[in-house]
Image (cartoon, rainbow, N blue to C red):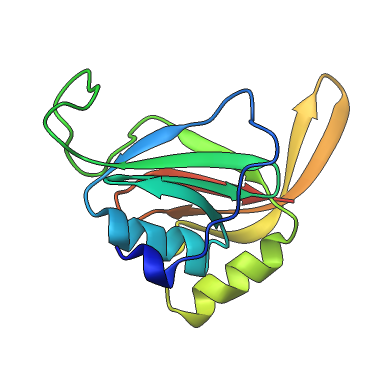
Length: 139
């Protein structure tokens, strides 16, 4: 990945929780996260990238032999978790993915979640990133 082709936008305020995902091909993941998912690249260092989308902050790290891993990393990565991400325009991301024929895990729809007797409605769709992490985009 060449820094000459990528603009960096400094982080204005650090989030209290920032997932860091191990990825098999950092350049490929950066392309998907920035071009298709709409994330902004905040900064990089060798084998690492820090991204944001609205109030979301995200880290990607190229798999390497000294990484903090609790067990073997086999595809799809992130089994057993999905990341719900509230974004400014879920439809724009969804349409961009459809235009690129990117595989959608669960199509865009409206889901109702109950909190006691209170209904919460959100537009959402699910997609896997290049390594299989399950991402749930909502508005």
